[in-house]
Image (tube, rainbow, N blue to C red; front, side):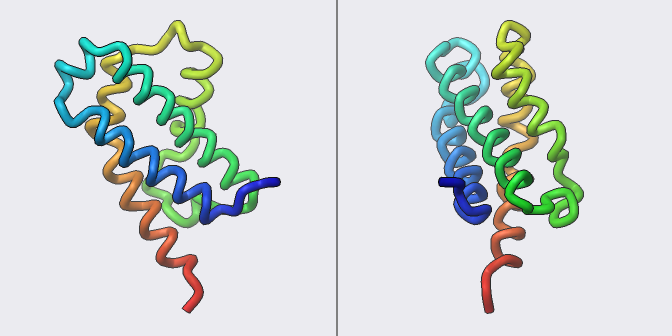
Length: 117
């Protein structure tokens, strides 16, 4: 049974929270801990899949939050999944450091706008 867009957006927020927990010790620890890197990559895959599923379910994310690079989020999921050998921990860290906070903020705004009054 397909998940509703609200559930998928919740999955994105849960994944962001998990990544924050996995990386709270900072970049150096992340780069030296293969399990932390794998966990973060798995959650980034989840984020990309949830975004793709929400869009396939009719949620117009690009219209709702045009400042978010939705195609790149889906594209990163595809690279991590299908071209895993190209994974660069420095790029993954850059996503953690720069992209997750604005993504979570956009998701929260979208969810607030979609709530029935």
